[in-house]
Length: 345
Image 1 (spheres, rainbow, N blue to C red):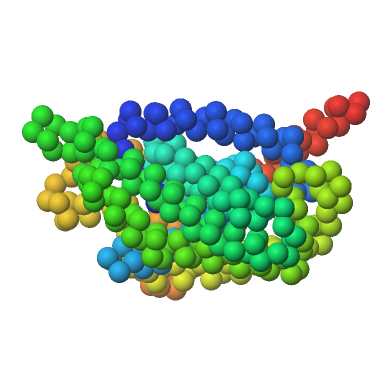
Image 2: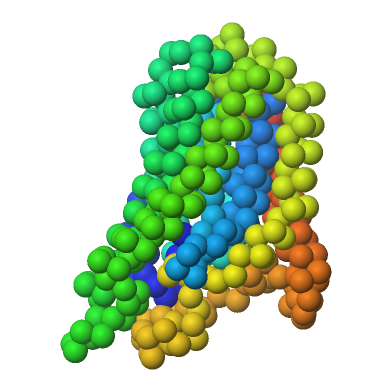
């Protein structure tokens, strides 16, 4: 679902970017008002969880791969606005450091994965769960359906963005300038991968995480929407250690994602596309290699000759991302505390 540069026209990228600027601005403003200082580490864990879970590629029968996003779970726990920020942080790091998703296409990728998935998931969850007890099966069932529907709606949006490219942007003789696949190809292909495998995976991750929290930590399911009596008395400090340990385990086992061979649909390089079509669209040639990632494809250049080396590089990249996420959230937390101190003075 990470659209690379060159698959979308500059016009499409500009429109999607223009849509996401006010969305992210609103999300940041919402967090300043609703996110408590002691909950900022949870945002860091959520962003890191989303980043890491996307490294777990699963094989699709058509020879491509797909992955969960983790946005649904983050939306249910911290709310859709926090999920938008957390997943956006993960996507930005993926694009700039690892070349996973394009820089120009960030607007589209954040729209699909950091906006559509969290909001669709959250409101489906709320529709089903309603005001039921925290331990109610309605919440468990609602989280499963929310995760499944959320990621499929995100995939559908990506399919539409890709599928309209040859219709809108082509040479006089009809040759596509950017994504060469039409809607009748992109929609079935993207939905096949997500309806059959990525969707159930997102649903399972979301549902069983909610089930675990129902048994072990009700407070985590009462953070959003904020309620004064619950959010001010959440005993999360000691419990956060468990989630850090779980995240570390997720990072250690991330190389399992390397076992899935193949490239995700419409994330092929120019050479891969040429082998499929016999040509590389002109726009893709111009835009596809503008940005050189520091650690392309989650690997250390020259250190991926064996599976062991590739695995170590994969884990190292996840650690780099975690460090950067912690830095960003620490800066956010610092300025929050400073602002609160200034108000008291």
